[in-house]
Length: 145
Image 1: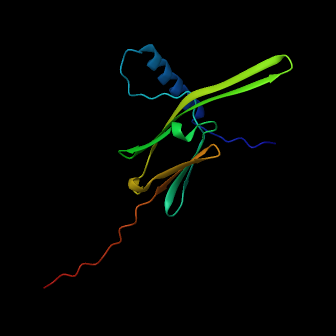
Image 2: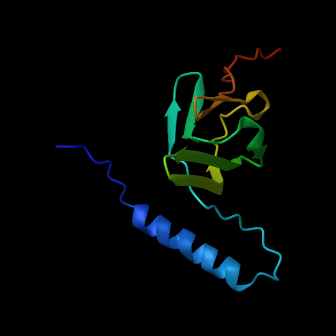
Image 3: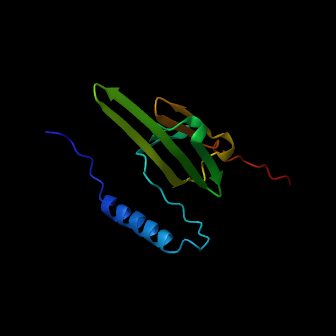
């Protein structure tokens, strides 16, 4: 028996994305700041004592085609994949192409240190490390009399 990951909001999120795409294509002349995606990479988010870690599955995406931005407490990941596989053998020819843009946004907590965010891509996985700010320790202030 295989384990299946339960996503209670999966269908609702898919419907929202489909409606966003529908309305964006219905009004192509309007300048819209809504970003749509051709595909959505799976993302794992982990919190440790010192940082937040985001791992996004992005097979076939060249690291040069990935943009990571941090602005106003929102971390944005955008990228594009383009790949082509050709196979020619004894009388047949097959060409498969994959193309698509992805766009994900995450709200970061106030404890995230936006100045020290780092990202790297390795073996089709984008790893983003978001350090936490050092805690401000309370200190006792002496009152002079």
